[in-house]
Length: 339
Image (cartoon, one colour):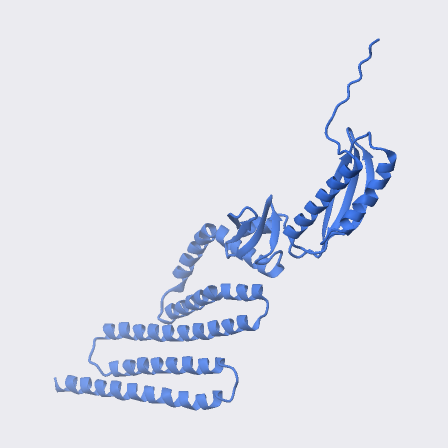
């Protein structure tokens, strides 16, 4: 009985001394390193000192508890369970320290990168990094305590196949998300056209992309639909080329036919946000004499392009009305032979 009491008292003394010593050593190391990190302009070294100091304290207390436990009169089986538990706690402390450092480095990297799409991609892999670190740490712990890994590897392989089949589409969408960020077919705020949809990109997500259509509603499209489709990105165009046709009646005089290209050029030249290219009498249609008009809008703003086109069309109508030139519309002439 006296031996048990002495061991219990000794265990408490070791626990008290070891905990105090761990706190003092951790604080001493932290103060020494702080004096060194003050000379640098970045804050990442301060963060690393704080994280390492906290992990040192936790490891010191854990090892102190383990040392104090050895002096307690406990059964061998219970002692084995406790040692395995201590190892597990140590693994958790180390994994958390590694994750904190890796995530801090990744976050600092994203702040240094000026490209917002690359920064977004780096932030998106942070959960994957954290999960990978935990998986490796747990597998190493199980292997360290003597667990037969063959059965676990077989179980993980079977589970991996099942998970792979179940997560096929989410994983595919994630890689399509990475493709969008790296290839940059479009970015947030840009106006695009795909699969009959005219919309502005609001947010590129891990699985889907949110678009705001010209009608105002939100359209959500999967990333794979976007990368596999034909995308017209109007935000990255320097000039918008507009081509359209007009037709006048066959009764229009030759003088007016010759005059129309000159009239159209004058109208376009006098229109803001429009640059004349050409206007030609191109064909004899079924019910009209057809002209093709081509001009450029020197910006990528869709609304400005439509405003310019509207002003040009109205001015053409007014000028044709003033000169007595009539637009053609679908007609059919029937000739009756009285004989």
